[in-house]
Length: 109
Image (cartoon, rainbow, N blue to C red):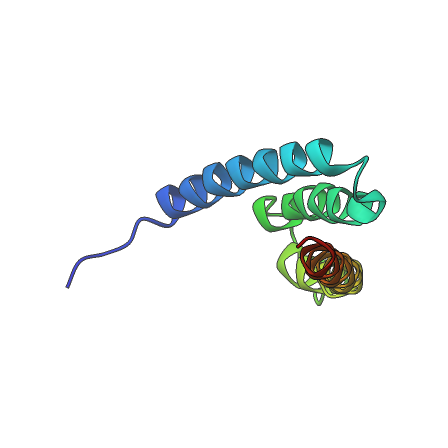
């Protein structure tokens, strides 16, 4: 069985994550007028990229207990509140748009 190079794995994950973040920022910029809640997505992506530095930085543990990896897990958990808030707002927007389209279809002969 082959061995996985951890450094290569991290570089690839950072590359894919950065590309994904750029795509999300582009989507948020494109939809910011029509969907005013997309700021939540942009802030989530920015903060996720910022706290990713904790995963990349390898420092000695604080008080021999809290290393950067554990702090990374601690900092990503609250970000889910922002992500779910965005997802809920997006679902509401899409549902409202779907209802409006169905009403417009009924009005047209």
